[in-house]
Length: 171
Length: 318
Picture 1 (tube, rainbow over the protein chains, first blue to last red):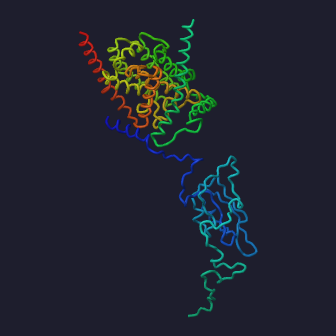
Picture 2: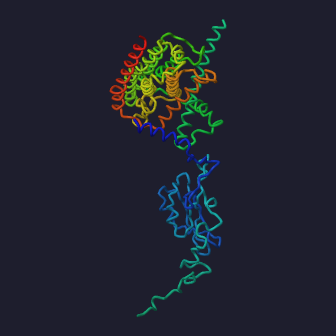
């Protein structure tokens, strides 16, 4: 009996507490910097696409919302011919970002992407690509990787030793 | 002629006032619950969200009015009306202010008790006619709970009748000019308050609907405006119980400075907010706990109150 009255009194005192609600459209909730929102494709510091179309993001995606097609340009660099994310399926789990070997696909703290037409939630490559390097400003895959492309042969990458002819390595 | 005109105006005023207040209580309840849970509640439609009820009404009128094929159709349709009609009829005897009362029956208190007993039928028939297991369980609970709480709800009021010497609600209020009955009848007030909670099946005692176990109980098969009528009927019940508490124990319209209608409304609103506070704070008891509380604690208390009050009145009369 006493505890009933006491709990009613405690609830009544809550009238004088500040409210927890963020009145959303006018007042936005503070987001942590690593919040997982809208997915973007970043570029390397030279301004070229980071994505090498390895299909790892598409393979790891639990809801199969990423579709892409690999292609290769005249320099020998791989890139996606198309890159499509269906945001009506995406669950923003961030697995694609973790799987990406070149830090190309990244999740941003932007969640305001409501649409009236479902089809508008399908983002193509030109909708996804941003101009900057995103969270990793220094990283450039082709500059550090041992892959030979036009203008950079094997052994010319950063921190990379010149190639060794293994057949001449005799004991 | 003016007499008829005046009484018609009172009837229309009480009817519209009670219906409007009861519908508006939905907004009040949601805002108050939100306040006590550190939220805002509905605050978008109109100033402070006051027009939320209007928006809800428009929505509910456009809902499909669906009767399940397995339901007992005529009873299913009549049941929601019973709840509302009995609540509104009981308001006919509530004295809102001197002269503002639809009917000053000399047995007004008995009329109120009879109407609140009839209100059980709305719930029970609704649960029965829905022809589904959860509704039936809700209806059974409603029947048992409301019938057993009916008994000492009546008994707890007999002390007031003894003190006032009348069953007429207007005379009961007039008898409280010197002293409100909540002091000499504190026990009766407590019992009536709890019984009123059970009678209006409000939250600590909302076992007939019990969303978490019976999926809304007796009205789980209802939709559209029929559900709306059950909903408004419940709020009419709250308003009625609060108005009766004010009339019987807290001096009705009596009070200094302000006009009588204002005092009546203020006191009633305080008790309505109290009901909402209890909803915000208290958990729902188990069914057997509810019944044993009623029969083993409250019923003897009501009898004790009646006997002591009778003895005091008798001793003072000699």
